[in-house]
Length: 173
Ligand code: RP5
Image (cartoon, rainbow, N blue to C red; front, top):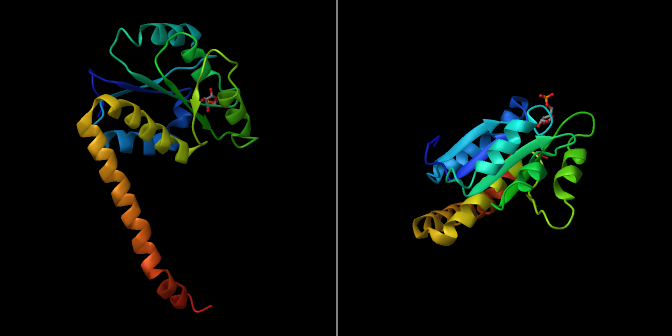
């Protein structure tokens, strides 16, 4: 939920990243984690990025999720101005389809870590889940919700397994 008491910030380098981030907001909502969402660019609005990162802890935030594509400096720049955990999501972009974003986000020099997740939509989901797992270290209720999420996920795979042979027969191949 979008909230003034946000513990998680989801920051995207451009609003063009939003379609890839839907899964993150869906998971944060499902787990009732209050978040704030921003469009802040390390390159186009560097002063805003600096101000946001420097004041994040004072503003009650606990984790920053940063999604960016191409040169993708956002997560690293944010991490350089705060000791809060920063999770980076490499965004797919033309012409390299996110491989450039992946390397830019993951290859932080020693001293300023960024926890980089999968590129693209899967990464958005994993970033939200990973943020939840960090928060769950001091939130028993959230920890239980995550265990329920895992159990439901397991049940879905078992259900698929139990019907897969019938589904293959239906393909008539
Ligand atoms: C990055 O550049 C953004 O995160 C986005 O993934 C990419 C392209 O941005 P736009 O040109 O679509 O605004 O900073």
